[in-house]
Length: 207
Image (cartoon, rainbow, N blue to C red; front, side, top):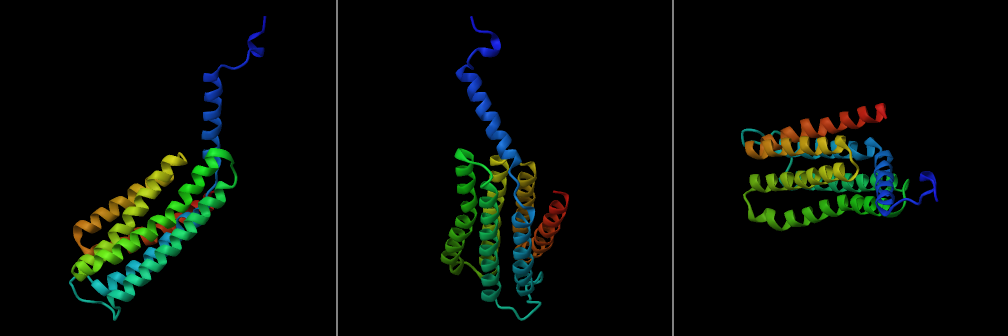
């Protein structure tokens, strides 16, 4: 008769061990905060500052920046930020194998795909709207994609940090949309652009 220590594990016990190992692997994957937050902070600080200077709070431009130039700068900066974030996540994902690695790789490239597809959609829809509303479409839709990806990332990697960042991005985006294009650009540049830069540097220092 086999002792308890020699008894083969039941299927339920084996499944629990596998799930615990997968959860531990996800928790220990290190994603460089500089790659995850700093690119977005720089992109939003530059791009939304340009939009704010063009729109202003009173309907008058504060600097000789055209709408096309400001939108193009913002879009290009966000595409670069999405690519850097995807690289950071896929690089961190090399630490694991199997289903966890596949899940991380697919999530990483979802960043670049989400931003690129949103840009294509905005290109098609923006000309149908008044200038101020088209700028709000560009900014609000991009931030919505990033919000969802951060919150989903928090769920995938069991990271309260990423999920909280997604919630903060959603709150700033919602407030800006309600207040209008000028306020949306200003709040995003300061609270998200500057905030993400500070957060990336702070969390990198603590890691």
